[in-house]
Image 1 (cartoon, helix red, strand yellow):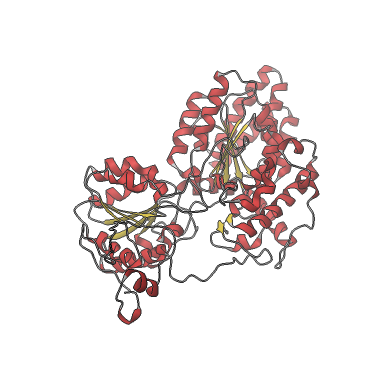
Image 2: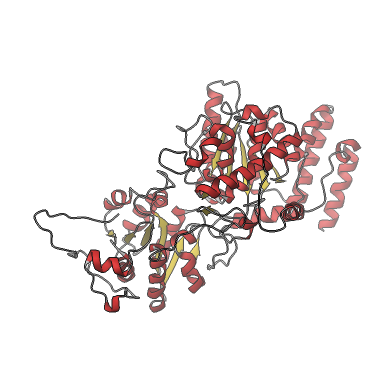
Length: 592
């Protein structure tokens, strides 16, 4: 039946339109996934193995201080600029550490966007904004990269007060489409001369519920905007964590867009062909429009994005400047107010083999050796608090089959990757969806499971209403584990976990625990496991434990054989511990 429908569509197309309109712009037949693999193979052949090194000089990049300097470049020079920019990024981050592979994957996209559009009059929003390093290098901040994520230096995310080229801050995720829509409506209402608002949403940010709320509204309002879906196949960190859903990305949307990539060829000048249609007589335009809509339905069955009111373009090879630039130019010059979703396929860590080989694609790194990709890490005196929590939860889960773990796309950061290796069927990664994670845990608690909902302190802010309405008011025994409580350092104010005591402390029915050391952390995990009559919160900071020697010296522990107990024991709620008796001054302290 599919063959017959496709044959009829082909006959209709051949009969109803001038031959040149369809032969000149015939789509390539090679599947998009195969084309991208060819690009990868070509890149791999140029860097066959370590030691890796970049160009000795960067003449094109040296000539570009701001996007306006790119306007004079031809396509060959734009490609050279992308090559130089990629190695500038590798060299800069190798010295400071930071978010790495997400930016490597958007080098060509960044070059194309700044070549086609005119910031700061046009708005480009990066979501999540840790993809913004190449953007910062092309907007007057290249010389400041030695200060990246340092006191007084440049932020690792877009920051409005840092530069007029940072249209909107997005240290969390899934906010760009809402912001771009607001900007677009405002530009229209204020009768501004130009209205180009581009939301670049990637690295899993499209899985956040707020992105769908915005898309639903954008189609309804017919807001003029371009959403660039940077589809790099990574939702959680690291991808490949063993969970109840397997090891695939924690998002059905990721599977959906992957199917689009596999089933359709990369597009190049489809939008150009549609614009060319305007040159035909009106009766031919109308026939062509109806045939185009019919053919799209036969070939693709439509897309989710089209049902939300967007004009869908894609998939596009996100590393192919020859196609990215003209397609973006056509979208820029279109008179239509219909929102557009440009679906590009990129490779996280593109162009640097050590990143491609890592399980997390070197998402966030410390200083590293460019030649090998090996990170420079000092030997920790004690295990990380995250690993201590995870192993303590494994101890509790070994004894209690009702215990399950939940994370919102951060298995590596919350220890759920460790827990998942031991209990994959009891580990749930819901993607970037904190609201869903909390209520999902509440539903589990209703049926008798003991959910540990493990979310960074700063990200739990996104699920606050669910904590109040779905958990606390119903007094459900959900265990909320807040990693990264307190000040987190390099990631800055968007990631500090400074507010949880205030926003959790005012909610009724919560038991809040804050350990001062790793022994108390182990004990409080066991305490949480035993609280079945209401919700509880366990918050602990980023970092490592003190180690046995310091625990005995500083905190008066008497440890058997000088070793930290391997397993925690429940503590009495509301009972304090005297570390040492003060002299004249008495102080009460809580570690944060």
